[in-house]
Amino acid sequence: MATKKKMLQAAAGSGGGGVTPTIFVTDNESTIIAVDVSDPTAMTELSLFATGFSGTGGSFLGADSTKSLLFMSWGDNSHVIDASNPEVLSTLGSVDLGDGAEAEIAVDADLEVFFVGCGDGLFAVDYSAPATPTQLDLYSTVGTANVAVVDPVAQVAYVTSTSRDELISLDYSTPTNITLLDTETNGATLDGARYMALSPDGDTIFVAAQSDDEISSFNVSSPAIITYINDFTSGTFMNNPRHVFYNTSTSELIGLTTQPNLGISIVDVSNPSSMSLNGSLIVADMGSLAGAVFNDAEQVLFVSFRDSATTYTNQVVAFDVSNSASIAVLGTFTPSAVTNLGSMALIA
Image 1: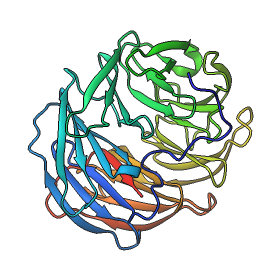
Image 2: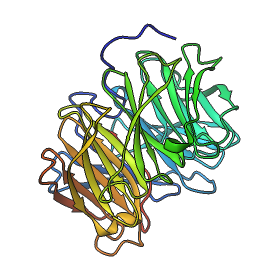
Image 3: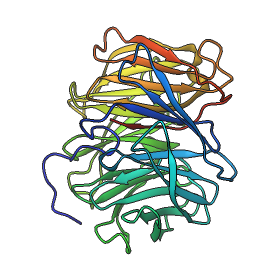
């Protein structure tokens, strides 16, 4: 495990610099739509890429902004896609892992390794040669690895497992030999644990527990000793929380809830032991949430909705979250020829 530093490096997919902000969204299967979001009030389609991949279940994306690469997992295979020209996407290479992703793909751009959480566990894949991505390891003792968040400074992956209601820290400094650091099994705060967000200093991780209807904070300043801090519950926010994002500009957590109180809520997490609600916006279609990404630099949240949505049917919606007291819709985007949106990734 690498020595802990005070600040995390920029997360892959959230700040490559000098790149037109582009979101990529799947049709929950093999097609990827590239969307120019440099002006969130007038998002425009750049391309619609029919990958030709085959698989079952939902497809999930990840991104390396520094190298303009997309990663897609669908079925047993994971793929590397050249996104340097989002108007002409192309497949570079693929690897058969024998299992498909359960959620979005986590990326360590420095090591050039991406992580796929599957029913079999957590896969590490080397993409330093994009044409021939290679499986490095499978850590298989976590049950179903739903979501992974990586700390590229400490070279630690945090994994949730809804099959075991656990939060797990894994040392991947030698990615061919991923090793267990700690397991947190606080059932009172991890029932249905899935999506997570890591603080910029890498010291605190926030876990959305869907079955517990709460956000739980854990001290991970020493990743080998995960320590429970507190949890936050609120009727307007904590019903089945899904995606969560850390806003580095405001020390707030942006969360999406899917039932029965639907919408976006922003929580002050500057003191993880005493979290409080700063603002919320009811979005009735959040029950049809498909995917989400957050552009921290621009303070814009992008959410994709499935075809079951009523107002935002099969659309991407951009929300201004710069002011927690007045969350607002900036614009919407409807793809030209896709009928059911899915996972998202951002290159910016």
